[in-house]
Amino acid sequence: MQGGQPKNIDKILDMAETAEQAGVESVWVGDSLTAKPRLEPLTVLAAVAARTRRVRLGTGVMLGALRHPVLLSHAAATVDLISEGRLVLGMGVGGAFNDAQRQEWENAGVDPSSRASRFEEVVHLLKRLTSGERVTHNGRHFQMEDVAIAPVSPNEGGTRVLIASHWRANRDSQFERAARLGDGVISISDYPDEFTQVNDRVKFHAEVLGRDYDAMERVFYLTVNLTSDSDAATAEADRFLKMYYGINMWADRWGPFGAPELAIERIRLYREAGAQTIVVRFASFEQENQLDTFLTEVAPAFKD
Image (cartoon, rainbow, N blue to C red; front, side):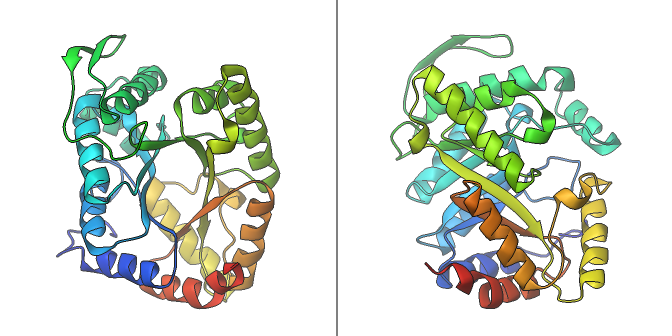
C-alpha cells in the first residue's frame, strides 16, 4: 500500500503463494492502526493462511499494547487454527517517533508512557489464553475473572511470540523481557555484531530464569532494496522509509540498498551472528519485481 485505498489484496496473496512455491519458509506483514498505511495484519494472515499450506505466517512487528488481550488472543488463536499452527507473532512495545505515531496511541485510548508495562501484560495474558488456560488476573492495566477463549492455538504453550529487542536501545530490560515472556527474539535495526550481543543477553537472562534458550527462535528483520543501481536503490528506499515512518530514522542501520550480492553478504553476516530466520522487507514501491529478484538472485545462495 502507498497510502491509498486498495481495490483488493490479490497482489499480497499472489506474492505469498509465489514465495511458498519458491521454497521461502515464512511470510510476514507489518502492523499499524492509524500511523502508517497498513492492512490489519491478522485479517491479512487469515487470508494468506487460506491460500497457502506450508509457510509460517508472521507479524513484524505487532504493537500488542494497542490491543485488548482477550480480543487479540481470540483473533490470534483463530488464525493459528486456520493455518494449522503456522502463526508467529513478532511483537514489540512500539514507539512514538513522530506526530502520527503519538496520535496513534491516543486514538487507541492508550497512554504511550505506559506502553511497556501494558505490553508485558498483554503478552503474558495472550500466552495463557491461547494455550487454553482459564484466566483470572488483576493487573495494572487489565482485570479479568475466569476468562477462557475458544478456539485455542493448536501449538502447545499457545501462539508463538517473538519479542522485539534491540541493542541500540541500551536497555537490558528488553532482553530480560524477551527471555521471560517470549518464544524467541526479533531485532530490526541492529548491526550484526550488536545482534550477537542481543542474543548473548537474552541467553543470560533465559538461563537465570531457568528457560531453555536453545528452544528460542532468533530472528532478524532486514530491510533491502535490490535495484542494481545503488544510487537509485538508495533514493527509492529513502522515499519508501520516509513515507512509512515519516522520517528515515535509522540511516545505515537499514540496508543494504543495491546489487543482490550485497544482500547475500549481509544475510550471511546475520546468520553468523546467530539469526536462524531472516525476514526480508523490500524498501521499494515495486514489490513484485523486488520479490522476483530476491527469489532468482538472492534465495538460491541459501538453498542449503
